[in-house]
Image 1 (cartoon, helix red, strand yellow):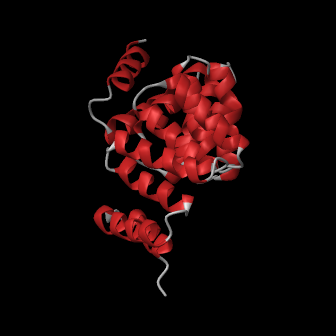
Image 2: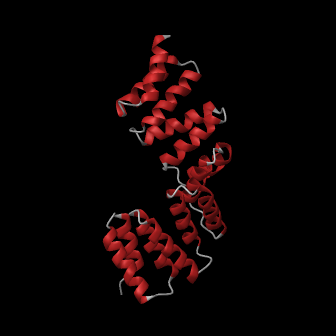
Image 3: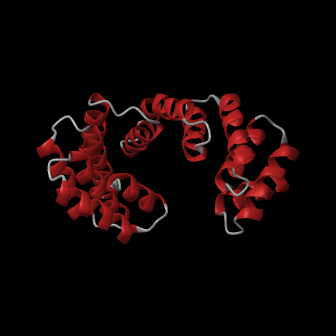
Length: 217
């Protein structure tokens, strides 16, 4: 007997959204009380930008199981995409209370707190995201930015170095390394990093501006 949920998740990961919807739809027909299937269906709708429809499926999941943390997480993601930051924060926090404890939720809570311009509060969430998923370069980059924002330039530099080690195309990380090295008065290394940022993204205005300042002085 085929496992429609597992099949649908596989399709979703492969970006085969129509096939994923078909698998989850079949699962819902066969097991209408299975809250997980509604969450999965909602995740596909969210991935293709059908946010209002996705919301309905997450809400249906919660009507089947009010403790379904992943449904709260799904709703949080929808609210985040709709730029409803307060609702996003509330739902991510509810998801956490209901047992969702992976790197993604810490990352999304951190990103939400940044919308409130609270990088100091966001910092431990990015730190936890990186602890749980060290290969997540975007979480590490945001963690580095928060560290830099708190004046922890040395620690931030370490994080940005790790970002470019795993993603050689991360122009913003090279730019921030350039700024960090300039801060430490290592002009030559700063220029190397800014050049790398511009190699990756020729129209990186901030990197071009920083390089101009360093080379003119």
